Length: 103
Image (cartoon, rainbow, N blue to C red; front, top):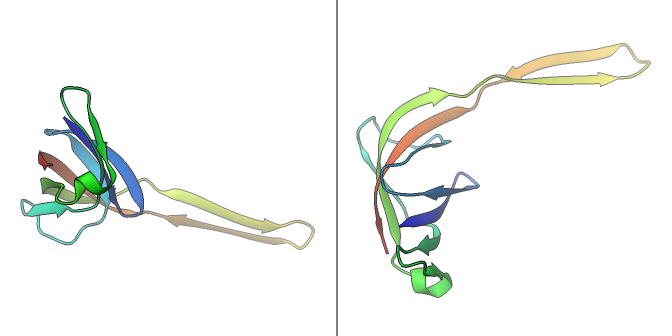
C-alpha cells in the first residue's frame, strides 16, 4: 500500500516504513505527525483511490530529526556594469518516518 501526500508545497509518494525528508515541520524529535492532505492511495490489489473517496484518509508518522539541506549558491550579475553578487542558502528540513496509512 502506498499514498501520495502533499506537504510544504511538494508531493511525496510514501509507504509504511519509508523515511522522507520534507520542509520543516513544527514538533520535537519523536513526536507524532499526521498528514491530512492525501491525494491518492494505491491499494495492494492494484486499485488506485483518488478524489472524493479519500475524505477521511490520513498518513501517520513520527519526526526523526531536524536538519538543514545542502547549500545552494545563488550568483547574480549584470553584464557590462561590474555588478556581481554571490549568496548561499540552506533550507531547513525535517526527516519523517511513515508509520501507517489510514484510508
